[in-house]
Amino acid sequence: MHANTASLTDDPLCLTIDANPVGSGFQPVPKLRDEVAMDVCECLIDMASALFSLPSKELRGAGRSTLPVSRVRQIAMYVAHVVLRLTMGDVGRGFGRDRTTVVHACQIVEDLRDDPEFDRVVSMFERVASAAFRTRLGL
Image (tube, rainbow, N blue to C red; front, side):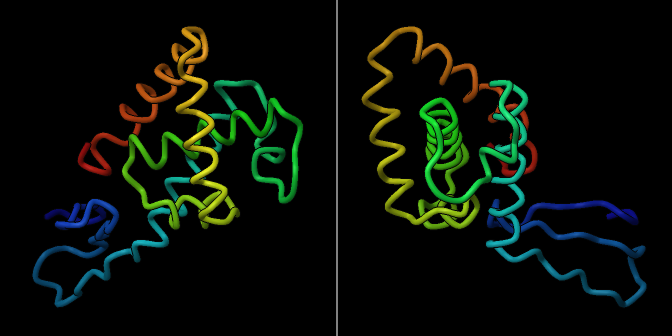
């Protein structure tokens, strides 16, 4: 591996950074699973913010939000769990919410997907997220 490159280990949520050339005696330390999950959730929040024209600060905000903000956050949580295969606990930590909130978000999104327009929007976000993380998470 060359200097300053990243590689995936067997665990798709464990990224190893090789900051020195081979033979230097340096052993790269894998990023912890929680760190990778947090990074992925942060990226998803930024992507949702851009795609749905909402301030990322509102999506990251603690406590209750308006329905449009909550719905976009629920979609992002759903995609993190279903498409990117993060555990509900990891998604909850990444979004600053409890695991049970992620369970609820996934149930709501699944129920709302019966509406063709809502399903189209969720499918679009799933495709974007999958493309964005395909190499990093081995999707």
